[in-house]
Length: 241
Image (cartoon, rainbow, N blue to C red; front, top):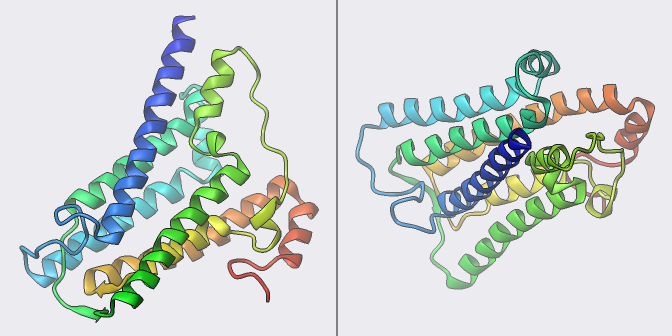
C-alpha cells in the first residue's frame, strides 16, 4: 500500500511539474513576462549567447530522443519500476525545459517587430491557438497516459496497465501530428521575432521534423499495416483543403 501511494505521489508531482513547465514555456515563447521571456535584456556577447542557447536546445533534443528510443526504454525497464517509466521521462523533459528557460541568453536584433495593434492581436491569436491545438491533441490521444499519471493511477488501483489502442479522433482524421503542428504555430507566430526567437524556432522545427520521422517508425512497428494505411491516407502536418 505504501509503495503504491509513493508511486501515485511521484506521478502526481511529475504531472503538476510538467503542466507548470508548459505554462512557463508559453510565457517564455510569448514574451509574456519581462524576466521569463526569451527576449529579456541581453547581458552577454553574441557568440557566447549562441553557444549557450544552441546547447540548451540540443540537450533537450538529446534527452527527448534518447528516452523515446526502444532500446533505451528496455534498458530503463531493467531497473526502473514500470509504472514510473513515463513519469521519469516527463520529469527529465521538464527539467531540461526549465533549464532552457532560466539559462536562456537573449540575442539582440529582430527579424521583424510588428507595430500595428491589429496585426499584434492576430499574431497572439495564432500563438494561443497553437497552444490550444497542442493541448487538445494531448486529450485526444489520452492526456493522462501521455504525462504518466494514468500508469501510476492504475498501479495504485492494482489494475494492470493496458496499452492505448490505435484510433484517429477529431484532429487526427485531418492530419497525423496535430500536437506538433500546435507547437510549430506557437513557436513561429510572434509579433516580435528576435534573433534569439528565430534560433529557437528554427532548431525546434528541425527537431520536430526529425522526431516525427523517428516516431512514425515506432508507430509502424507497433500498429503495422493499420498505421501504414493511415500514413498514406492522412497528411503529416497540414490538412488538405
